[in-house]
Length: 554
Ligand SMILES: Cc1ncc(C[n+]2csc(CCOP(=O)(O)OP(=O)(O)O)c2C)c(N)n1
Ligand SMILES: [Mg+2]
Image (tube, rainbow, N blue to C red):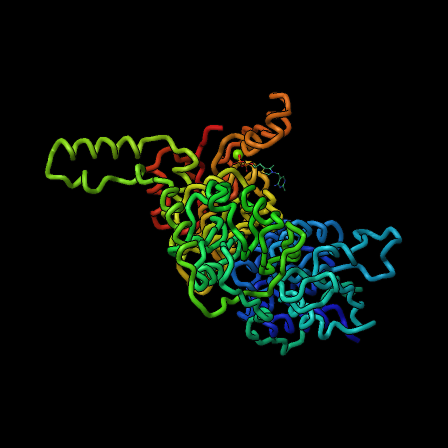
């Protein structure tokens, strides 16, 4: 007879054979066979297991692991509300195009709908947000063979459900019912081989002619291909700070004002979009224009189509021919005039080394003033951006800070992550921990930094809890603490709501002591108020988990 233990063992072996390396598990009874097969394979180095008691945190941790590796991460949980806690991360993964394999244990069909303990309706729970959903048979009634292959292929973009866009990665759901015995000894010779990581399906590129006055737009997760297209076509590159494409000679500084300018933004005829732009009204307005031809490379579960006639492309390539230097030149000139000068924050090297004592003294005084100046949002984002190098990872939460960063920071070729699929303030710390763990696997160097607001931090405090026996990630969680959600101060509600209501229901003030939280969860803690101290903290070697609190004025 096939038991839950046999079926779970072969499912996990098959997942490993299809390239899955990271499995996040949460404790539970119904899922015991799956968890035990996973820990067995982890002990033999075939996969890595990460244990999180909160399934919501587990889901976002898997999301972070998969964001970084671009390989599906699996999540195992028990039946009941445990499964529902995977929903936020699943929604984000669907909209951001991140591959996940959800393995939810369930009661057998005869125990559903009859009031049995911890039994609810799990099939279909994630339906609008998964590329494939299967309610597997109870082992013995049917087989789980082949499910893993199907799940991994669908997660990598195989066209499984009619609603899912082909070629885009995303989450899949395997609901796995089991009867007693829920676990047992694994076969003596139980083993698995780690197969090669699955590759995304390439898809045929749309070839771009050179004629039109074109801009390349890089939204969240666009990455280096956006810069390559802009370079190949000789087009200006409007790259959001979260795009991973804000580098190269063709980036446009201060793009919001330039998009509003009728002489520049107004003359755009074509926009090539990679990734998911969400940070500015100006880009949204451009992509809604019906006089602009928009070609969007698919990046998430939903095709971008703000103007109702956007062409979706699997990828883009630039046709041979001559670049239009004039159009790029106009943008580059305007861009050069829009660079935000943060250099007043940087030391005046000439002055500091001048032979003239008076000049030197003045430079030292200015330098001291600068390093003692209380931190504001611009100084904070500048300091974090400067401290980040290609082997590091930077994650932005959804808060005012990411918008300030987008507005003022220059170009740099570094890996940036953010959950802009749905721009939730949930799961930011857990996602960043997943990114840290994946990017630092097998001895790789680098630090992961996450920059977020105080409410986003408090929303995900549970993610600070890590098991003592897992490798220590090198991470700096940097909280810009302005005592609540100040993003609302600049939104419509601030103009309509009475002040008292704005404060109570939107700003939502708190007096949480972040230091106590950090200590309770075993994190190092520093409160930092000056530029000098911040630069010092961000450039010192990091060996573990640090919480850095930066008080900011509302
Ligand atoms: C899960 C979720 N709930 C609510 C929101 C709405 N929301 C957007 S920003 C924000 C406040 C963020 O505050 P904080 O993290 O302190 O950043 P700040 O704006 O103060 O910089 C809220 C509640 C959201 N995006 N996601
Ligand atoms: Mg805040």
